[in-house]
Image 1 (tube, rainbow, N blue to C red):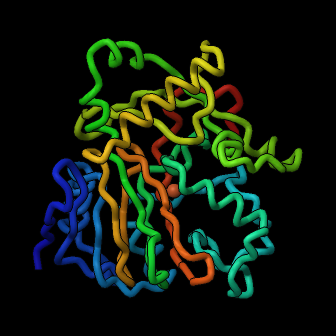
Image 2 (image 1 turned 90 degrees about the horizontal axis):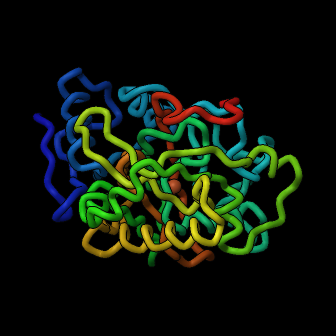
Length: 297
Ligand SMILES: [Fe+2]
């Protein structure tokens, strides 16, 4: 069965038919999905009842899993519920019970409801993220995506010239601080120290330019903090106008794949007394976008 894609939104996002993500893909199918990602930036695969191993195997058709020596979370390694290669974005603790609303892991996760691009706080930001919806709550919990190419294209010429060579500092500390979660250990502060990212990036295949924004961005290099944050807030407001946003309403066993180089996303509220078990695999990027002050992976 050929791979086909049906648009879900006027400017981006598509739903794929003709792919069983549990089975090895032939080269033609991989190429069709990659071409679809380049064009749509977000692809939805319905009815994919994946095990963790199957999700990892599917992900590896498109490159190498993200590996990091630098921590990206406050959860301790011994508290992980899932095995290596797959990240737990559920509201469950290691034993499978609902997380306490006062758990600092929960506080940390809440900031994923701010617009962001995955791993923009790492020296090598992520390429694709693949999120599998295993158990979903009865209300809310959409994932929203914003097309950063369309947002860039819609900037006026003066603003395009202004953002052209700007560099931002990204850190998990900034996005957590934004919701008032500031109780980090000295080790966490060291692990989350800022990295630099360009504010405009160019897609390596299509050549389309996009704004590289995220709640992790807390400063513009060479600007005062208030001036930089205000400009980033203005740009984020522009980039997340409804005309650039696709809101994904999850069905069980959806697999949603997004290109972090071309989009931002955010989680939406749900009833914390219900289980939301979603699991993510992540593809690493090709390398740092600019030279990093202290690059250690
Ligand atoms: Fe995310």
